[in-house]
Image 1 (cartoon, rainbow, N blue to C red):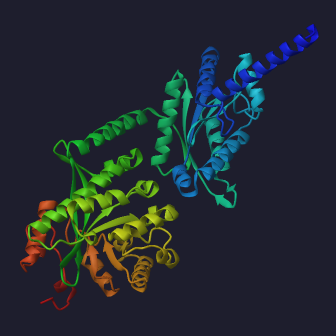
Image 2 (image 1 turned 60 degrees about the vertical axis):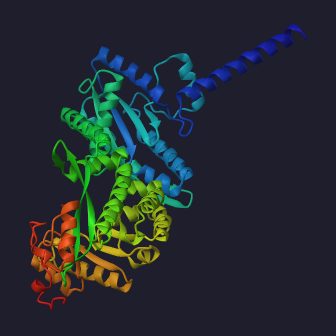
Length: 504
């Protein structure tokens, strides 16, 4: 080979080696799905930007962006559709930012980005993907929160626009948390963590918005973390208990069923469900907690049977987590097999909102559960998108009228009309209808006049522990008027109050 040939080969080898090195750097620093900088590159970028801000006394903002209900979209429509959605969101974040908002626009090509990594110049990307459905934006040289507000609102509006993924038109929203340097932190970890905390405040407030971090959030987050840690241990320590609220036939006063309601006995006191159910949902702990509840209900029903009582069906609330994971069949099957209980005594309740958000994923799950013989109930009915068309598709047994309609029966003709329509809908589909949240005699009379006789609420009985509920069943089985028994501090009203003939 001539000297010229060797020179050309050497040059080619060096070129190929550099291209390979560039590719490696690109893969190490950029997200392969969206082409945006990844977590590692963004942290380096933020560290350099904070260092410059310290020297110049300027302000920097970090915007932590999370796509609302992305997991639901991913689980329902598939990962390919989820990937398309993420790519489109990345593109919109990129194009919505103005050059004056940020260090620089990140609309350079990947090859150009690789060159920047090589040269060691200040990074120019302002949008990054941290992973999953989480994105992050860096704003520099801002004068205050007003500048951030304008950018955050533009980003939210861009994400809200319809997204076309193949034949599907998707509508998504985002939650954005914001932290500022130097106000909320002077290092990379603090700024990202504070923005993350603020983002979760937006989630808790209903999503689809933005929030600037403040110090009060730190205390709330610390309390939430302690609560979640304690909840992890609650199952191990047998601190969770179920209370049972009777479902009553208002004409006869007979207990025809019960709803199992979760309680947490922590340090000798009952923690209100409102304080821990949301934490259990968000952390995923609701899955093992619900599976424990199914086992516990089956165990209690078996115990009541062995005590000589005629048990009544007991319902358990099921969260969206089980719909998304579609893992409920096996726990139910196992609990029924272990207890030897009749499947008809177990009822699973899903809220209408959860059902409608996951209807395609829910349908095969509900069908599988029905094949086991359990009953299916739709809770909070009337608050979602009630229609005969979807009800006819679902293997359900019971509709529960949401307490908000029952509560306003006396003051709202519209709510009375909705209740009438739900009862008629249930009758046309041969479904049981239960009114929940019944607290006054007027509500009971009005519901009965409209054709609903199965009711649940404080007018009849509050939720009581398992032993007290067994006593209710025992008193009823003796033929005594359990409605005035000591097992509950709330008088229960039946045929006499309705002015109907009492059962023999």
